[in-house]
Image (tube, rainbow, N blue to C red; front, top):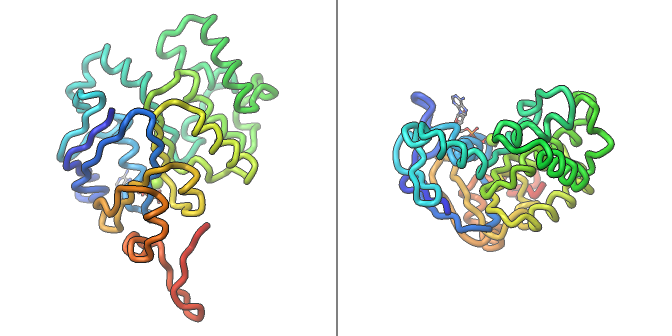
Length: 251
Ligand SMILES: Nc1ncnc2c1ncn2[C@@H]1O[C@H](COP(=O)(O)OP(=O)(O)OP(=O)(O)O)[C@@H](O)[C@H]1O
Ligand SMILES: [Mg+2]
């Protein structure tokens, strides 16, 4: 469904990631790991077609994603419907006057009929426990509620590739559990970026790990990665405390 071939991205002179090659199959649940600045958010933006590779190739359903190919309006519309990105900062996604309008926004943009918009919005609002807030302005919600809303906004369009950037950052344990259950219920391919190792196993069965020098350090089972002290060390997830010596942070 998705293929990257020797993909690199630079912001001017700043390297975000380099030499990434991997494929994602339909329905896979992948967790994207790496320390701060490793390149996770940038990779998700590339997969969502918001940024374009500096080198290499990105294929989505065998079609190249580039500035040029997304100029085709029909293909762009299809790609925008089928791929959705939850930004690391949910507030950057919320700007409509009410929660209902937020949930309806993407469907309206994609030209869905009003009746279907209403049905889909009410279905996902219920599923995401947002029904009581539909007429409220999003800024009146709590941080966790806003994060849930930002995620909920992506679901009515029923994306095939869902990209989540630190989706649990503002969620309490109960909402985190709810989110994990929801992700496994969704039939779409999901890539979840996080540096929360204790959640990694619950968020995906496969891990793609970016190294501190922005390359691909590991691509394989999440459990095997978490069991390997050597890989955890290489990824930069081991921290040395003065008194306690080598220590793995699992939070
Ligand atoms: N808009 C930007 N302009 C210039 N450099 C950027 C920009 N955004 C990110 N970078 C740089 O690109 C690199 C990768 O950043 P990115 O945000 O993708 O990392 P990340 O893995 O998501 O980090 P975090 O865990 O902190 O969210 C970093 O060195 C960062 O400083
Ligand atoms: Mg990030």
